[in-house]
Image 1: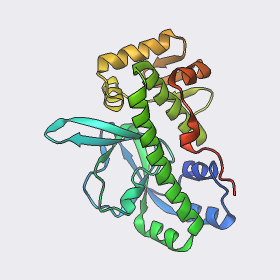
Image 2: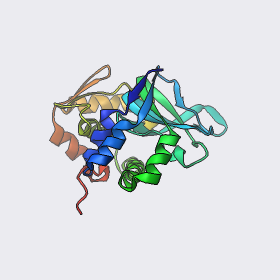
Image 3: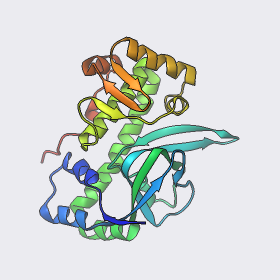
Length: 246
């Protein structure tokens, strides 16, 4: 495994939301990480295992995957992680995760020793608050998924997901011009949205027919952003993209 400095995506993630003092930025960039690659569907972080490292997304997507008791072949996806996201920062505190994190398409990650995080939390209070903020935003995204699932029909629900993923990617410089990649199979979209693959297929077709998107393979082009936002009632406030005002 190749040793690297921490991904610039995470630095942008924090700078999008708050000012970083020179000493904080220097400490962030001094974090040493280990690079690892995963193929589609491979487990990046297993469930119920106490890890000594935390994992940050570098390229591709990953998903929080839950297996259902008594139905080992079924799963529910409760989060998607984009470049710059810590996928298991809460595992730094907890004795293992209650879910697995799996690769969605080809995925690259950076692994950070918990000892590095301990040193930061003991010596850099501002960075510690920002790490806490990252977990709070993660929780806010999860709550918004619940709201979207309860209040939106299939096409609008899918549109909301597309708006969110594009906004998160563009915030760290991983997408622009309305174009991004979403390497999800229809059955994986079904696991996320809670519909059958047939309903997902119809929702994709509906968004195309409305002239809102083009979708070919994993490549998505948003043609009408305002129309997509209006249909899905998307409000990015829960992503907390504005800098903290003090």
